[in-house]
Length: 76
Image: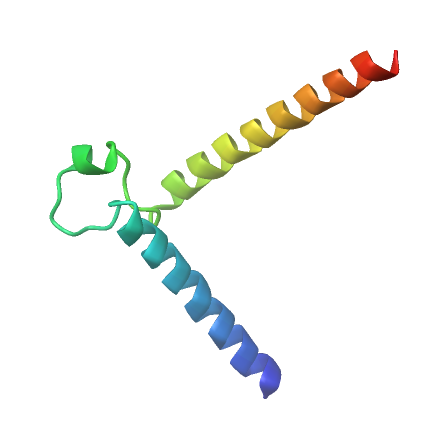
């Protein structure tokens, strides 16, 4: 029973977190034009989530590559 409650709370927290993020960045469907949210659709669209995830991964990889290059320069 605790696992089921934890699962339900996890789903609700995920949905609530996505809604809060969309609402705080102007991406929610609140009657505003697309340009008010910098032309980005709400994250409830899986294509948008996938695109955001790909951008995040690219930034992490670029940062890791930069750190690796700096470490190689300092270690010789």
